[in-house]
Length: 407
Image (cartoon, rainbow, N blue to C red; front, side, top):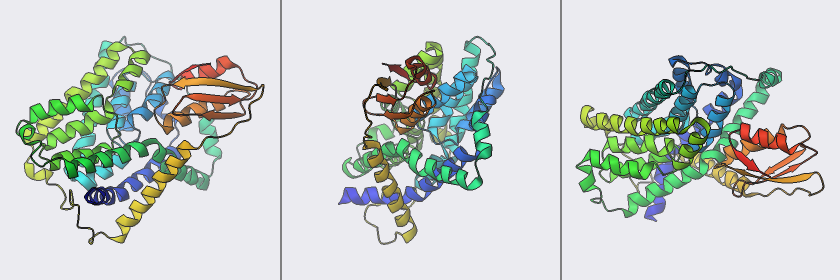
């Protein structure tokens, strides 16, 4: 029961802020033209780098969801430097994770986290710009989506915002959010209070250990928050928690491999170095130059048994969030039946990591001439396409979306 109480307390702290973040994210998706992003990130110099970082910070995309987005932006005219800046800034934070960070770790963490993401993104993007040939790339953004948005009414856009925020986005990061909560609850309940005492006395050593764990780890910005909280409750420093919050969502082996393939090994190494150096620098600054009183955790943090004081509002938000997560899980595992005939062809798509990737592939294939129906299996990569179509156009559409395919 203690594990359940710990999990419930964390969920009640985070759920109102997470739901608010989902709503804001949906409104941004529905009301801001997507081709605006690529249009402002073309060309060389520091301006596209700054713009891409500022665009990426509020977007609630996890490290797997940001990859196809950044690659599509790159292929639509964004510079390599701007794409790197976007890749670093976006997965570290977002409107949902900023709100959740405030609820669990306090206002200072909620401010320092996006600032650190901005600085590391600028550092990485500018470094890539200096290291790579400064060749201007023509922006080739289609206005078809903009025209479609003009024809869509406000009510339809709002419905689209709700669908994206509370269906698509929940499906994209829901699994990692649940994993983060469970891991945090397990640490809080089962790890002895003095387990991290030795590491807690040496912040630099603890940061290195956390980096070794966090870089290959795959967790979204919101899912990393309860893990960081549980580590602080066990004695690790605030700076070490920040290292986890920065490196965990932004760096993993899958991202590094895809960036190496798409933008070159040099850009990928700079991307990884910017995250590691930035996380260490901000973590040490937090521990040695900021007052410890700034990082006093909320009174309810780590409490497992005081459930009587929980109000109806956080309980309602928790119930809504759990319902959305269950619905997303059911939707993700439903297998659509497609009638196989002579117009049906199967492909294997690789590189998908989440429902956001799955939706991107389905949308890209669905836009190919002659395609009538698409079914994408996230776990196996098996993609069934119905309709008289050109297989070469399917392959091109998938690769332009940032993934690979074989028929």
